[in-house]
Amino acid sequence: MLFDLRAPGRKRAVQAVYVVLALVLVGGTILFGVGTNGPGLFSNDNGQQNSTSLSDQNKDRLDALTKKVRANPKDAAAWGQIALLRYSSGNNQIPETDATTQAAPPLPDKARKEYVKAAEAWRSYVALNPDPIDIQVARAMSGVFAPTGLNQAGPYAEAQALFVQAQEDKATKEKRKVTVDVYVPLLQAQYAAKRPERLTKITIDKMRALTPKSQTKELDATIALAKDPNDAKAAKVLTDAQQAAGGGTAPGGTVTLPDEPTKTTSTAPAPSSGK
Image (cartoon, rainbow, N blue to C red; front, side):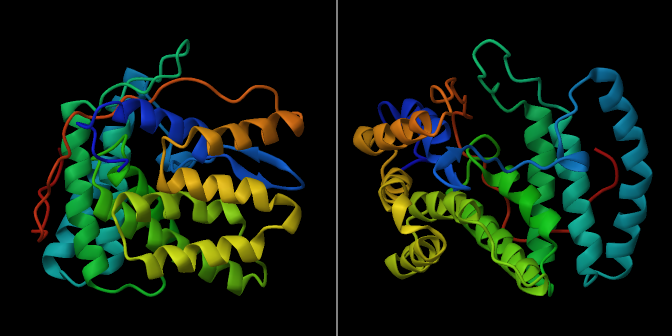
């Protein structure tokens, strides 16, 4: 599957996924890519001066939050904010994407360590069953566990599921429907983590309910690529659809992934302050 990077040609398969699978149905017939990282706190500001400044600003916040969870380990909101700060700190350790090839660099050790700490805080957060799930925290953790992060299929699928749940809850409160692109990364993650067929079927059924019949062919191709990133026929269907919608050629580039998944502990002790 997607996360088994040692299999022959797997990195090229992942490239195909990130080039084509992320194409989603928007508006009439056009498809385009979506990502996991959000703006603001979650964006990659990789300038060295800005990184140092952000770290200094966040250290006081992290110290305060650490004291809170030590005094009250059941403070879910504090655990969530710790996860966000660790994720942001990790992002600031990642060099910019190569502007020529659009290739993401390997995850640096310093970034990996911050992501691991974010994962520990996340586990404490989820264990407390927060209701509702903080949509920003769930979105950030999707980035932490993604192939370009810690590369952990199971936790990635869990984070994506909670992110989608938060999206659905928000849409319900605002009396609107979520868009089909919300489910594309979730389905990809479910297949990669080898989730039961009943779960992938639920996701697919939701995608079909949100997709106009005129786009059934493109949706089928998206589903096929989620299951098998090497499906060249499905990739061509999406590329052709994008070109027909005036999107030009499909986006190119590669995604460089870590060589081995990083395993984190199953329990989360109270974090130490700072890095």
